[in-house]
Image (tube, helix red, strand yellow):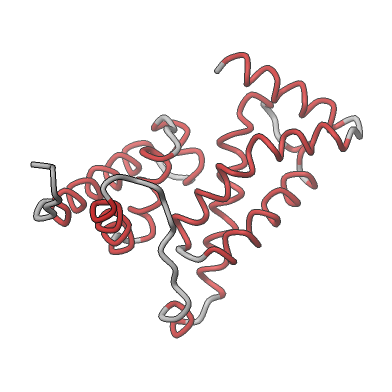
Length: 179
């Protein structure tokens, strides 16, 4: 993990000097993670694809503003967070009721995967985002606080509340071969 951070920092320095290919390498490393994050937050593939492109364009335009290149991960997720919430603010209430897709995620058994996706959708956007950052992306609480622009205590509160709600929602799920 430390080696990866050094590599990212090196690519960032090259990008700042005008090496576009270095930025393309950064994109190839981070694009899937950013897309998956946005997909879980937005529940809409096309919006996630569009915003992923917007995130990397904004990151490229602002790469010189990144104070600590080793913090590229939280920084790019913060940009993604801002883009997602800008979309939420622009979206009309009736738009939220149409076109919602459940992200396809290979998990076994299928019933449990569907139940988990449905349970995530029922969380508030703040709670869902906390779960996605911690469980799916493995960020530390301090990194999550940086992405969400709130205190660590707020991050923990959102996450633990969300996990309790998920536990309640998923408790009755029974699948063949389990339990």
